[in-house]
Length: 559
Image (cartoon, rainbow, N blue to C red):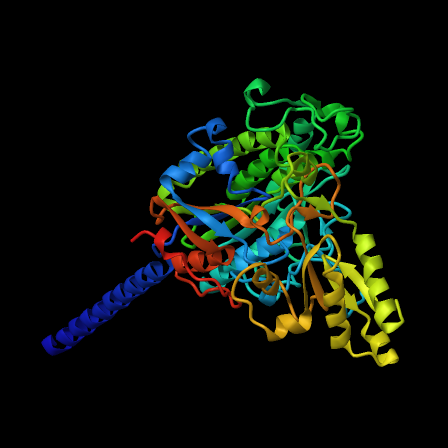
């Protein structure tokens, strides 16, 4: 009997031990999973792109900024003072793509905002995709990032976390939201103007807007911003960093006779595309901050065991720059207010995410040129070229040398596309044609450099403007001859600013890293814009984007 009782006792003890061991093993396993999933990375990473922001705006308007916006980033983050785009063309879609892919159009495939497709033989837009439909309104959402052929740092973060952690893109412009958030984003949202005044998306991401987006669109915020007056934030007499308010180098809204403050927005919206007007005033940046904060709350970003990524692009700075120029009171006021948006966003992050739980960078997708008409007035070489006249010159060249004006298929983005079928029909050698065009078009008064695709494929430029041209050349997509105008010579109206060149006024932009894990300091070292994505990848300890050619900026990273 004792032996029987002992056997039962031993069996029970064994079962208890097994139970304890099993429970203990499960506890350890759960802890290991927790440890694996919870790294030292921040809960939330934010990329901020201020569209068309020149580096010198940090200096020029410094005395107008508060202590908690741009200055807080500079004083408590790492300010890289000599960052440049290293390719042509410096356009919005290309800039956002290069920032997030860590490479140039050579690899990522976004060669402009719009470009001539030599296979389809028509102009295409960088994010148009007829395979998808609009979500949120009746139009404006047939979009996807499919033309971007490499991954982004946002893609790599999702892959590294086995598709856990969220990526959300926010911007006024569709391309500025879609391209940064990558192929694997949970959502990209952009603002549809006209009579809609709503943030929308595409069926590439979802079939219905989340409730928080619907609530935001129904809140009346967009309408409220336009039922007010845009006047200067401070007394206009203190705006001494820019030209007089009424000058001939600024564009004018429909319904105004002068480009002067104040702007009665409730009246102007009627003649300026209704909600489209919101894009071209600083309140477009305000609603971008509003929506970004709503996205953080609605998606609970920064609250899980995984790192989320919020890609924000402030687009209205670009619209204002295009409309009024870089030396206008309107632009100065826009950056004073932009500083307040940065302050508002960071204050929110500190309070709701916690400084130790987020990291960000702030940069721009390109800069901008001084209005050439103004430069002319102060005896600085500059000018305007007529692309139609360039096209006529190209036809005249081919007529003279090859007895035909039918072999130029398209001229766009300062690229010449030849009609290959016509060349074959006429038995004309393509390389001979391109070399003749290069030799002859360089005589044009507005053209400073020219290079054939053949040269760009077979010669390696190590520096200078031709190196940036080469970095922007994509063998599959680009034209057969590429042209570079003289400095400060643009194809644009004689009011307002534009961009697109490889000159310093278009390439030099801010880059500031800030937040958890970032050193305090500054640097005057040269860095190309394509170093941002590898730096973020290194910081997050994830694989670099699959086409990346940039290198990590190690000096910004904390121990």
